[in-house]
Length: 155
Image (cartoon, rainbow, N blue to C red; front, side, top):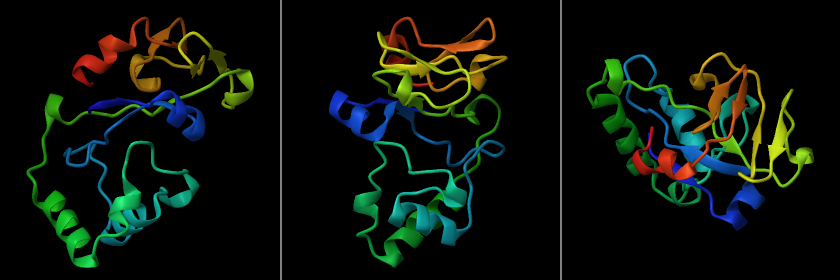
């Protein structure tokens, strides 16, 4: 659940203001996948099913150069790690999208909060419905008042 703010040049190029590491081992909320999917994600840098590219800073460009044996060993390790439950089995929110103007925000109801440099305004019921570090305020996701609070301890 560590939060990664994208430096300005990377944010503009990738369209990502902030992302968080995925929960790979949770018993319920873990991001489990078959070996073939794992290998595709780490060597091509995209999620399967058209869900788009892996969020920055995942270094898939480095993983794609690893041997099949090494990638399979990483997968095997992740499959054998004890599966945490309860508060240690976290839901990881989606990445916060970077923007310079409303044209960069494409989801229904989104606008660009130019102060924070991220898209806000998607419909929500709780904070968990919002991108990483955003909060649900009166039914719409809002940028955090201070990103340093979000970044200090992860999620």
